[in-house]
Length: 311
Length: 228
Image (tube, rainbow over all chains, first blue to last red; front, top):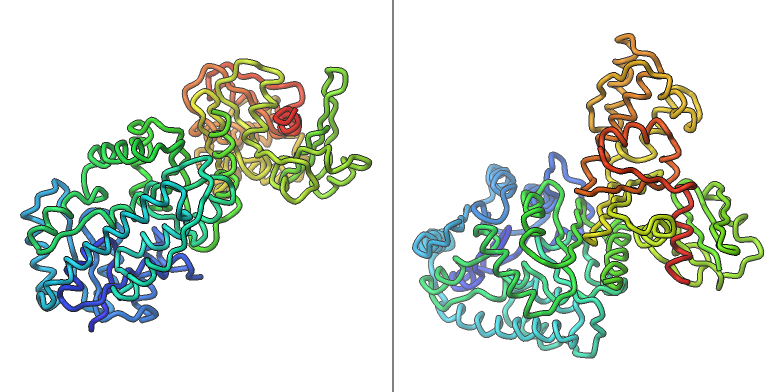
């Protein structure tokens, strides 16, 4: 089975259906100790350098170059020039399902065509479990850190659907205090212990925006997948994403919003518009290199919790 | 009960006796001198080292600043706390804050570079500024490159006093990028004892600027007030 690197959300339904084993190259970044050369965003710069040096073992790479991450377009080409077979995948900004369908057929061709048509249906079942985890986390039955570690893995299902199903089944439930309920929006923090740190400082993350995108899309064939994934909010106009967030935050009754941004990421420019669009107390964080959550970020989180308590 | 603010460069203690604020200030690493004879249960700490020093409770500098400033000014829009290693802008009305701690331009460290270059004490900068007859434009937003620009202005014939004034204006512009719409801005932190910098901030911000009598101890006082 070929190991297929992905740089952002690429329907894992199609990769598994084509007999591939997806591997989200971002997953190695938070625990890495890399100081990449020629970097803008550390997320893309680190996977670029590790792929070029063959420190991430994949047989080919799918770069999400249209919609979502702009730096990946260049860093992906850098990897392609190093000799790794690379495919560039584009989401439609206008949400046109026919365009996305054509992209998925091209991708299917790159991956060697569909061999296991039953896989997308099986993944839909797994995603229902993901929705359940998300709901229980929001009710204080699963810890935010444990829920995040599973939900973020829905981008590639850890390359092993059976193993991932067992990991989901092994989640322990207990009761967690939800004093200050916060939503974490934007790209995921580059710090591997962020959710634990937030919890220790009295902030319970009850919504993770990007991982929620990983569990809410699906389909049993290319047509269905195209119709659903064309609403992947990160690739669409900001107004649509803000409207979607308003609904989700209302459902989860959050007290505040943490907008995580990554140094040199174009999503940072969205902060002002998101602040205008969401009527919640909001903390904007900016991270750069990976590792554990630094003191400067902890100070902001602690001050944000104190602020929520004063309201 | 006392408020103890152990920051990146100085430590401050504040207490209220018969309605009057009493305080002492020393360097960060001598903070123990401030709490001799005071039980841990009587200390409400804040500042970078708030968790490392003995305490009954801790509070962040952001919350402490709000409580401390309200002791002097009941109606506050925005607080600008210019510290040794960072600058915090607290939008009290909109419940928001931003902290600049990635870049030395706009923090006390920036003015330390300037003082070190001229081999003068930090507290002399304000006095020099007031003697300036002209103010050169120093536009660089990077603290290190601003020093290079400062040297260029000296080469161009500006006096030490004028270049110091130029640096204060560069500093004030940097801070102004962080300050939201507001009528009244309260300045706190040891750096605002520099009257040259305050003059530049008044001109650049164009807002009603208030400064408490001892701006350096506001967070220590606020830590105390947040608890009592």
